[in-house]
Image (tube, rainbow, N blue to C red):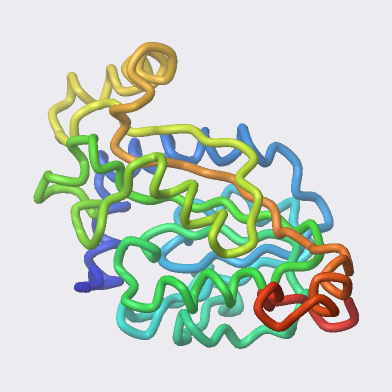
Length: 242
Protein backbone atom coordinates (compact mmCIF):
# COMPACT_ATOMS: atom_id res chain seq x y z
CA UNK A 1 0.00 0.00 0.00
CA UNK A 2 1.07 3.59 -0.59
CA UNK A 3 0.69 5.95 2.36
CA UNK A 4 -0.16 9.61 1.64
CA UNK A 5 2.61 11.90 2.82
CA UNK A 6 1.98 13.71 6.09
CA UNK A 7 2.93 17.06 4.55
CA UNK A 8 0.47 16.58 1.68
CA UNK A 9 -2.26 15.72 4.18
CA UNK A 10 -1.49 18.79 6.26
CA UNK A 11 -1.61 20.97 3.15
CA UNK A 12 -4.94 19.48 2.06
CA UNK A 13 -6.60 20.21 5.39
CA UNK A 14 -5.33 23.80 5.20
CA UNK A 15 -7.27 24.37 1.96
CA UNK A 16 -10.94 25.50 1.83
CA UNK A 17 -11.92 22.05 0.54
CA UNK A 18 -9.98 20.34 3.32
CA UNK A 19 -11.53 22.51 6.01
CA UNK A 20 -15.06 21.83 4.77
CA UNK A 21 -14.33 18.09 4.51
CA UNK A 22 -12.96 18.09 8.07
CA UNK A 23 -16.08 19.86 9.33
CA UNK A 24 -18.35 17.32 7.61
CA UNK A 25 -16.53 14.27 9.00
CA UNK A 26 -16.04 15.98 12.36
CA UNK A 27 -19.78 16.43 12.76
CA UNK A 28 -20.27 12.66 12.40
CA UNK A 29 -17.57 12.02 15.01
CA UNK A 30 -19.00 14.51 17.50
CA UNK A 31 -22.49 13.07 17.00
CA UNK A 32 -21.11 9.70 18.12
CA UNK A 33 -18.93 11.13 20.89
CA UNK A 34 -20.59 14.30 22.16
CA UNK A 35 -18.82 14.00 25.53
CA UNK A 36 -15.29 12.72 26.19
CA UNK A 37 -14.59 14.54 29.44
CA UNK A 38 -11.95 12.75 31.48
CA UNK A 39 -11.10 10.21 28.76
CA UNK A 40 -7.67 9.36 27.35
CA UNK A 41 -7.79 9.61 23.55
CA UNK A 42 -5.43 8.37 20.85
CA UNK A 43 -5.56 9.52 17.24
CA UNK A 44 -4.00 6.94 14.91
CA UNK A 45 -3.11 7.87 11.34
CA UNK A 46 -3.47 11.54 10.39
CA UNK A 47 -6.12 12.68 12.86
CA UNK A 48 -4.84 16.03 14.13
CA UNK A 49 -7.42 18.19 12.26
CA UNK A 50 -10.13 16.22 14.07
CA UNK A 51 -8.42 15.91 17.45
CA UNK A 52 -8.21 19.67 17.88
CA UNK A 53 -11.95 19.95 18.50
CA UNK A 54 -11.95 17.01 20.96
CA UNK A 55 -8.81 17.82 22.96
CA UNK A 56 -10.27 20.46 25.35
CA UNK A 57 -12.60 17.95 27.07
CA UNK A 58 -10.24 15.00 27.29
CA UNK A 59 -7.92 14.03 30.12
CA UNK A 60 -5.10 13.30 27.67
CA UNK A 61 -4.78 13.26 23.89
CA UNK A 62 -2.02 11.80 21.71
CA UNK A 63 -1.53 11.74 17.94
CA UNK A 64 0.24 8.60 16.71
CA UNK A 65 1.35 8.81 13.08
CA UNK A 66 2.51 5.67 11.23
CA UNK A 67 6.17 5.51 10.30
CA UNK A 68 5.40 5.12 6.59
CA UNK A 69 3.36 8.33 6.64
CA UNK A 70 5.65 10.63 8.62
CA UNK A 71 5.03 12.87 11.59
CA UNK A 72 4.51 16.57 12.29
CA UNK A 73 4.54 18.60 15.49
CA UNK A 74 1.08 18.87 17.11
CA UNK A 75 -0.50 20.94 18.57
CA UNK A 76 1.20 23.99 17.05
CA UNK A 77 2.95 26.46 19.35
CA UNK A 78 2.71 24.24 22.45
CA UNK A 79 4.39 21.10 23.78
CA UNK A 80 4.39 18.27 21.25
CA UNK A 81 1.81 15.49 21.71
CA UNK A 82 2.46 13.61 18.45
CA UNK A 83 4.72 10.62 17.95
CA UNK A 84 5.93 8.34 15.17
CA UNK A 85 5.34 4.60 15.54
CA UNK A 86 4.74 1.35 13.71
CA UNK A 87 0.95 0.94 13.54
CA UNK A 88 1.44 -2.76 14.41
CA UNK A 89 3.41 -1.97 17.60
CA UNK A 90 1.77 0.91 19.42
CA UNK A 91 3.91 2.31 22.26
CA UNK A 92 1.15 2.25 24.90
CA UNK A 93 0.48 -0.18 27.78
CA UNK A 94 -2.36 -2.69 27.72
CA UNK A 95 -5.80 -1.29 28.63
CA UNK A 96 -4.41 2.25 28.91
CA UNK A 97 -6.74 4.24 26.63
CA UNK A 98 -10.48 4.88 26.70
CA UNK A 99 -10.93 5.94 23.08
CA UNK A 100 -9.12 5.64 19.75
CA UNK A 101 -9.86 7.54 16.52
CA UNK A 102 -8.44 6.08 13.30
CA UNK A 103 -8.34 8.18 10.10
CA UNK A 104 -6.06 7.88 7.05
CA UNK A 105 -4.65 4.60 8.36
CA UNK A 106 -6.73 1.44 7.84
CA UNK A 107 -7.02 1.79 4.07
CA UNK A 108 -3.26 2.35 3.66
CA UNK A 109 -1.74 -0.22 6.02
CA UNK A 110 -0.30 -3.56 4.94
CA UNK A 111 -0.59 -4.64 8.60
CA UNK A 112 -4.30 -4.13 9.13
CA UNK A 113 -4.79 -7.25 11.25
CA UNK A 114 -1.88 -6.40 13.52
CA UNK A 115 -3.04 -2.79 13.79
CA UNK A 116 -6.56 -3.82 14.79
CA UNK A 117 -5.12 -6.20 17.38
CA UNK A 118 -2.99 -3.39 18.78
CA UNK A 119 -5.98 -1.06 19.01
CA UNK A 120 -7.83 -3.80 20.93
CA UNK A 121 -4.84 -4.29 23.24
CA UNK A 122 -4.38 -0.65 24.24
CA UNK A 123 -8.09 0.03 24.76
CA UNK A 124 -9.49 -0.39 28.26
CA UNK A 125 -12.37 -2.85 28.82
CA UNK A 126 -15.45 -1.46 27.05
CA UNK A 127 -13.20 1.13 25.39
CA UNK A 128 -14.43 2.51 22.09
CA UNK A 129 -12.94 3.22 18.69
CA UNK A 130 -14.15 5.37 15.80
CA UNK A 131 -12.64 4.67 12.40
CA UNK A 132 -13.06 6.44 9.06
CA UNK A 133 -12.31 4.77 5.72
CA UNK A 134 -12.99 5.58 2.05
CA UNK A 135 -16.32 4.27 0.79
CA UNK A 136 -15.92 2.03 -2.26
CA UNK A 137 -19.19 3.42 -3.64
CA UNK A 138 -18.30 7.09 -3.10
CA UNK A 139 -16.59 9.51 -5.50
CA UNK A 140 -13.99 10.66 -2.94
CA UNK A 141 -12.22 7.30 -3.29
CA UNK A 142 -11.69 8.04 -7.01
CA UNK A 143 -10.76 11.72 -7.08
CA UNK A 144 -7.11 12.85 -7.38
CA UNK A 145 -8.02 15.83 -5.19
CA UNK A 146 -9.06 13.58 -2.31
CA UNK A 147 -6.74 12.25 0.41
CA UNK A 148 -9.19 9.33 0.67
CA UNK A 149 -8.23 8.15 -2.84
CA UNK A 150 -5.19 6.31 -1.43
CA UNK A 151 -5.19 2.68 -0.41
CA UNK A 152 -8.04 0.18 -0.20
CA UNK A 153 -11.63 1.49 -0.05
CA UNK A 154 -14.24 -0.50 1.86
CA UNK A 155 -17.89 -1.39 1.55
CA UNK A 156 -20.07 -1.00 4.63
CA UNK A 157 -20.20 -4.80 5.03
CA UNK A 158 -16.41 -5.17 4.75
CA UNK A 159 -15.89 -2.41 7.31
CA UNK A 160 -18.24 -4.05 9.80
CA UNK A 161 -16.59 -7.43 9.27
CA UNK A 162 -13.16 -5.93 9.94
CA UNK A 163 -14.27 -4.95 13.44
CA UNK A 164 -16.19 -8.15 14.13
CA UNK A 165 -13.22 -10.31 13.16
CA UNK A 166 -10.94 -8.49 15.62
CA UNK A 167 -13.03 -8.76 18.79
CA UNK A 168 -14.95 -5.50 18.47
CA UNK A 169 -18.71 -5.03 18.59
CA UNK A 170 -19.86 -2.52 15.93
CA UNK A 171 -22.23 -0.05 17.55
CA UNK A 172 -23.04 2.75 15.11
CA UNK A 173 -22.27 3.51 11.50
CA UNK A 174 -22.64 6.64 9.42
CA UNK A 175 -21.36 8.23 6.24
CA UNK A 176 -20.02 11.65 5.31
CA UNK A 177 -18.70 13.65 2.35
CA UNK A 178 -21.73 13.58 0.09
CA UNK A 179 -20.66 16.73 -1.74
CA UNK A 180 -18.13 16.32 -4.58
CA UNK A 181 -14.40 16.85 -3.88
CA UNK A 182 -14.36 20.20 -5.65
CA UNK A 183 -12.92 23.52 -4.48
CA UNK A 184 -15.52 25.55 -6.40
CA UNK A 185 -17.16 28.12 -4.14
CA UNK A 186 -20.72 27.10 -4.88
CA UNK A 187 -19.88 23.48 -3.96
CA UNK A 188 -18.29 24.46 -0.66
CA UNK A 189 -21.12 26.86 0.20
CA UNK A 190 -23.72 24.14 -0.39
CA UNK A 191 -21.72 21.35 1.27
CA UNK A 192 -23.72 21.32 4.50
CA UNK A 193 -26.97 21.05 2.54
CA UNK A 194 -25.63 18.06 0.60
CA UNK A 195 -24.42 16.44 3.82
CA UNK A 196 -27.87 16.68 5.38
CA UNK A 197 -29.60 15.48 2.22
CA UNK A 198 -27.19 12.61 1.67
CA UNK A 199 -27.37 11.36 5.24
CA UNK A 200 -31.12 10.82 4.92
CA UNK A 201 -31.56 9.82 1.27
CA UNK A 202 -28.21 8.60 -0.12
CA UNK A 203 -26.43 7.14 2.91
CA UNK A 204 -24.74 4.42 0.85
CA UNK A 205 -22.92 6.91 -1.37
CA UNK A 206 -20.99 9.07 1.09
CA UNK A 207 -17.30 9.59 0.38
CA UNK A 208 -16.29 7.98 3.66
CA UNK A 209 -17.71 5.45 6.10
CA UNK A 210 -17.63 6.20 9.83
CA UNK A 211 -18.03 3.44 12.38
CA UNK A 212 -17.98 3.25 16.18
CA UNK A 213 -17.18 -0.07 17.86
CA UNK A 214 -16.64 -1.32 21.40
CA UNK A 215 -13.91 -3.65 22.65
CA UNK A 216 -15.31 -7.11 23.39
CA UNK A 217 -14.39 -8.77 26.67
CA UNK A 218 -15.15 -12.46 26.73
CA UNK A 219 -16.46 -14.22 29.83
CA UNK A 220 -14.44 -17.22 31.14
CA UNK A 221 -16.73 -19.73 29.41
CA UNK A 222 -13.73 -20.83 27.40
CA UNK A 223 -12.66 -23.03 30.32
CA UNK A 224 -15.55 -25.42 29.61
CA UNK A 225 -14.83 -25.45 25.91
CA UNK A 226 -11.14 -26.08 26.55
CA UNK A 227 -11.94 -29.10 28.76
CA UNK A 228 -13.81 -30.91 25.99
CA UNK A 229 -11.04 -31.28 23.46
CA UNK A 230 -8.30 -29.30 21.82
CA UNK A 231 -10.29 -29.31 18.55
CA UNK A 232 -13.17 -27.35 20.07
CA UNK A 233 -11.00 -24.69 21.65
CA UNK A 234 -10.25 -21.52 19.71
CA UNK A 235 -7.95 -19.13 21.61
CA UNK A 236 -9.10 -15.50 21.80
CA UNK A 237 -6.96 -12.53 22.82
CA UNK A 238 -7.75 -11.30 26.33
CA UNK A 239 -6.37 -8.35 28.30
CA UNK A 240 -4.08 -9.05 31.25
CA UNK A 241 -5.93 -9.96 34.44
CA UNK A 242 -9.01 -11.43 32.79
